[in-house]
Amino acid sequence: MNKYLAAENRYENMNYRRCGNSGLLLPEISLGLWHNFGGVDSFETGRDILHYAFDHGITHFDLANNYGPPPGSAEENFGKIMAQDFKSYRDELIISSKAGYTMWPGPYGDWGSRKYLIASCDQSLQRMGLDYVDIFYSHRPDPNTPLEETMQALDYIVRSGRALYVGISSYRAEETSRAAKILAELGTPCLIHQPKYNLFDRWVEGGLTEVLRQEGIGMIPFSPLQQGLLTNKYLDNIPEDSRAAKKTGFLQRDQVNEENVGKVKTLKKIADKRGQSIAQLAVSWLLHHEVVTSVLVGVSKISQLKDNINAINNNSFTADELGEIDRIMA
Ligand code: NDP
Image (tube, rainbow, N blue to C red):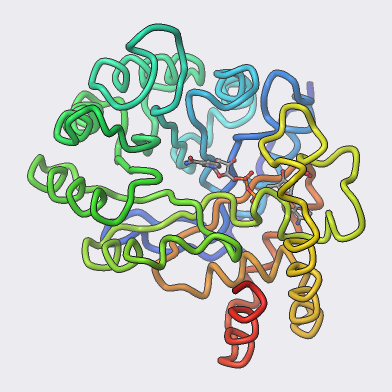
């Protein structure tokens, strides 16, 4: 195995944004390991993508207990790469993990109890070979556990040295507001919210963005490309190596339908005029929102990451472009 040495100019072409009111800066593009880094995927490709990311200023890698498949394998693979390549760069990295979805059998391997969150955090640290994660998330709200208990577990995870910051994912506006208040009272502020947000799915605009602004919480949108739909990938068909075609992919074939692909084809005309790819347009559109700290992309190839990183160079939109985009996606 070749020894990895990070590119010396790695910080020259990335921009960093402050995460809410915190002291933490995040790169405008972050990399998620939900797909393409599991036990079913090529370890070498994943390793190459991670090297490329760090070499280009991507300091933030996002994981969760269940990423794979099989669940846990993305953290295990990341742990190997951490040990062999990134060990001496640990203080340059922001690594996150989460618990909230089904991870192990029985009543203590799912949702938002203190029992589950703390045990899961310990398992994630072990799989990744880390002493601490930078950000630990409650992966989804649990309607059957008091919010206070879930937030107290996050606070404890920080106080016990397992994480530096905490975040929440997919919490609605009202839940976010309550969670932020509980965390503030506990003395562990909510750093960041990770919602699904992209040109197809704009639910966050119905109240969440306002709460994040008021509370000084950063936002890191997941699935910014709607799992690949907001790219040139599906304009003609469903390619065999695409997420929609793979058995282990979460993008369903029926989401790649005529109506959605039709919208992407119309978007392409705006992207062409701006000199951008469709993926770049989708990422830039997110970055032009002030509340967005970082855009959390997934990639299966280095060429995709290169394309997405270039989006940071063209984040301003005219009112006409924004109006046209709204009309197309309505
Ligand atoms: P995207 O919407 O960015 O989709 C990624 C997929 O799009 C890639 O696998 C690839 O598909 C395709 N793609 C990416 N860039 C390009 C490009 N430039 N040109 C053509 N195709 C491209 O994000 P994900 O859905 O992967 O989510 C990103 C991250 O968000 C996850 O890894 C995870 O960290 C986080 N996440 C969090 C969730 C939560 O509940 N908090 C839920 C889901 C995700 P292909 O594989 O077909 O090549």
